[in-house]
Image 1 (cartoon, rainbow, N blue to C red):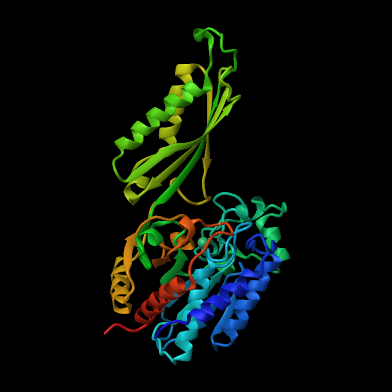
Image 2 (cartoon, protein in one colour):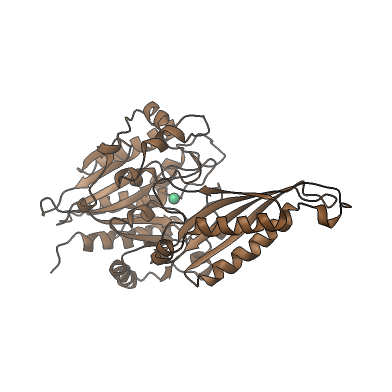
Amino acid sequence: MQTKVNRIQNDIETLAKFTSTPGKGVTRSSYSKEDRLAKDYFIEEMKKLNIDIHEDSFGTLFGRKEGTLKDAPAVMFGSHYDSVVNAGAFDGVAGTVSALEVMRILTENGFVNDYPLELIVMNAEEGETFGPSTGVTNTRAMMGTMTQHELDTVKNRFGQTKAEAMKEYGLNPDLKEAIRDPKTIKNFIELHVEQGPVLDREKVEIGLIEYLAGIGRYTIRFYGATADSTAPMKTRKDALVAAANFIAEFDERIKELGPDVTGMVGKLDITPNSNQFVPEYVEGKIEIRTFSKAIVENVDFKEMIEGLLEKAGEKFAIRTELQEIRRINYPNPTGPSIMNGDNVKKMQRICDELGYSHVLINNGTGHDSMIMTDFVDTNMIYVPSRNGGVSHCPEEWTDYESIKKGADVLLHLVMELSKKEG
Ligand SMILES: [Zn+2]
C-alpha cells in the first residue's frame, strides 16, 4: 500500500487558499474565519471515510476508526493546520494532510485494525498567535496542562484573550471536557517538514527523530548610567561592561555542566549604542537547550543566572534584572522530548523496505509531539524542506513527492502499531 501524491498536493493547494493574506503567503490564525474554513474542509474529507468525527471543547478535530479490540488505546496520528502571519503552505499542513491520506488509504483498502485508529487535526500550535510559550494549545488541553489563567490573560494581535477568541469561534473552552486520559492513546505520531536545511542538503528522503532538545529562555537587563566618552573611568556605571562580564561567566558555568546542556546570550540591545557615550542600558536574551532529563532535575538555572547577575551588579555598581520566559506549568528549561526508540527502529526498516533513504535527526523547534512525549509513546517523521530550510514565510517549500514518501512511512508504521502483537 502507498499514499497518493496527487491527493496530497490537492489537499495542500486547497488549504493554502484559506488565508487572510492572499498573495502574501498563508495566514491562518487559530480561531479565525480561515481556521474554520480549513476545518470544514477536513470534516468534508473525513465524512467520505465512514469514521467517527468529533470536535472537542478546544476545537481539536478527531476522526476515529474503531478496531477489533474493545476499549483499547488508539494509535493517534496527525498535526496542526494553523499558521503564523504570512507563512508558507507546508508547516503543520504537510503532517495533517499526510495523516488524512493515510486514513483514506486504510479505509479504501478495507484495512482491519485491532487497535482503534485516530486522526488528530489541530488548530492552535503556533506560539506567535498569542505570544511566546502560548502555542501547542490542543495537546496541552488534551493532556491537562493548560490553565484557565492562560486562557484569560494571553492576547492575540486583535487584543482578544484566548478564551474570547475561542468563544467567537463558537467554542466553549472547557478544560475538564478537553482532557483525555493518556491511557486511551497507544501512540502519537506526527509528520512535519524539517524547517531546517539538513535533509535537503544531504539528499536524504526521511528524517527520524530520536529526541528534541528542551528549551529555556530568559531576558536579562543591566541598568547603568550614561556619560560622555571623557567621563573618568572610576566614576562610570557601564552597563555593557557588566553584561560582558556576565556573558563570560555564564558561558563558563554552562561549559562546567558538561555536554548535556548548551546555552548562550544570543541577542543584545544596547542603549544608547553610540561610540561617544557610556552604555547606560543593556538587555540580553538567554537561550538554553537541554539534552537530558537529569540536567533539568539537578540544576536550578534561574538561581544560577540570578547569582551571576548579582555578582556582575555588585562589581560594577549597577542594577540588574531577570525575567523568565516560560510556559505555565512547565520547568524552564524544559526537559528533552524523547521519542519511542523501538518505533524509530521499525521506521528504519520500513524506509529500507520502501527504498527511501533515512537518517536520525535531532534538531527542531516546538511541536505538539514535544508535549505528548511526557505522556504517550511518541514519534516524529521529518520530510525535507527546500530553499535552505526556511519556514514561517511564503518561500517555505517541500516537494509533494517528498511528503508522499513521509506519508508512506507513516502509513506503514500506523498499520504495524494498530495490529495485535504475535
Ligand atoms: Zn508546525
